[in-house]
Length: 241
Image 1 (tube, rainbow, N blue to C red):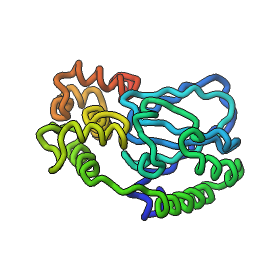
Image 2 (tube, rainbow, N blue to C red; image 1 turned 90 degrees about the vertical axis):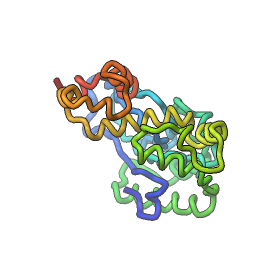
Image 3 (cartoon, one colour; image 1 turned 120 degrees about the horizontal axis):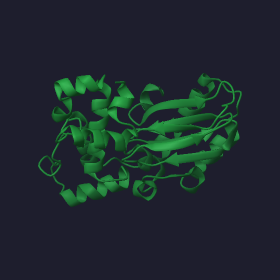
Image 4 (spheres, rainbow, N blue to C red; image 1 turned 30 degrees about the vertical axis):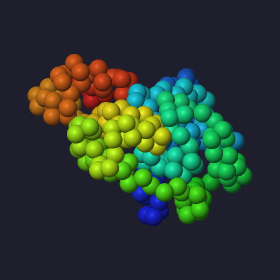
């Protein structure tokens, strides 16, 4: 976790590394979560990237040895911090230098492979605290309220019927595309999926309780199809038969 004052902007820091070289290529699956990430290779911090919002799973081919470190931003925060239109990188992974050269230089100049987790956290905390204090653009409370509504209702919400006051559906769509990277509907779909992912333990639980209906899916086929799009596997394969 980042320092407490950063937790309204940053969901977490993460690290993905090998303890010994892989003997065969591995495809690492990242499920849709509504967030945007910066990540870089600690062995060579010049290799840094940003991953935009996605309404489907993403697969990364990995091989040999690697040590990736990442920053996962809460929805809407990366564009406010780096003054970027999130729609421009939606469903993509691009070079960080193309959109945020300041943090690219910081990663390149300050990080190396021998750093401990605490050293990583301290450096990231310090940079982000300074960046937020100096460069954070003002929040649009209408967007924040809409995101909060969607999260509190687990993605099961009619945006048009429950709009924040003082905004039209067209205005809200523009805000979501700029700060989130997609429409309110797409974001709600990911939130709904994440919610059921947290509280579902087995395919049998899904069938017995028909929990997909309470989560806003039309039927079991709709749930399985959307789950596979967002996770890359069926619920049976994820939770075990």
